[in-house]
Length: 335
Image 1 (cartoon, helix red, strand yellow):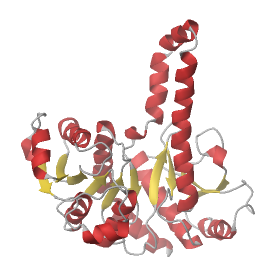
Image 2: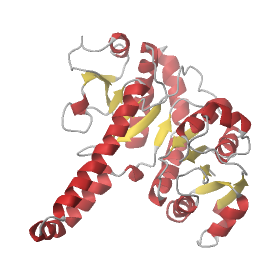
Image 3: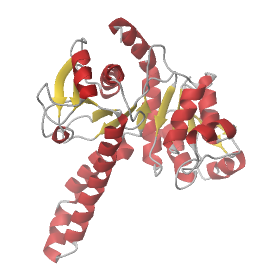
């Protein structure tokens, strides 16, 4: 039986929506969850729901690491925080993985401190799904964990991202590229150019350099895009901001005339489908690849759907033994 640890205290809006998502995962997906946080508060919220009590446990944690805390200090001093306790019950194999929608830096620091790295992994990256025009999402690796990278880090990111894309998005032969300022082989900076030479020697489907316009499905066909965490985080935040702005512009435009409102009513199913495709909640969160345990990092404003999706991804990663695959391929490719 696979149990998933859920940090219910660290989100922006309190524990109720996170618990709702966890209960939905139990009722609709058959998941088993350990809710980590203040036991009395969790118990009171659970009274609002019906669920199989054999599939829900509570792990008491009296402290919370908030968004303003220093990650490296907090995970050492706030030992009874919900994110640290969630990590520790993954480390002791009570749970196969964890989900936290809190302080990203604290979640990463806790995972590195208590789970450690998979043998052979140099630096664990964050793998973030980016919605596409059609088909499964593109995977952006690294989306913020490693601001400064070496070429061999990027080569490992390519291997880990390819495995994730195969196992979780069911892409048989993922196309892997490096984010650069041009498609030509000689474009890029010193690190990306050296990484290019390393990755093209690997037995993966490497398509070379890709540009920013290729990230959303309308340009070069690519399934995994590799970059350092500095650029990756900018891309991720810009994507989130642009998506919100587009819908805000549409909403304001529709208010301008009755004709536009009539058209919007007719297009409501289509607009709803587009919004769903672009909704981060459909994918749950971003996986911290390369740590010795499944660690999914969620958005601070994660809603019930995001939590349910995250729990599903954690279980899928465990079922597919993604960490064993990463360790085996890195050893086989000698990188």
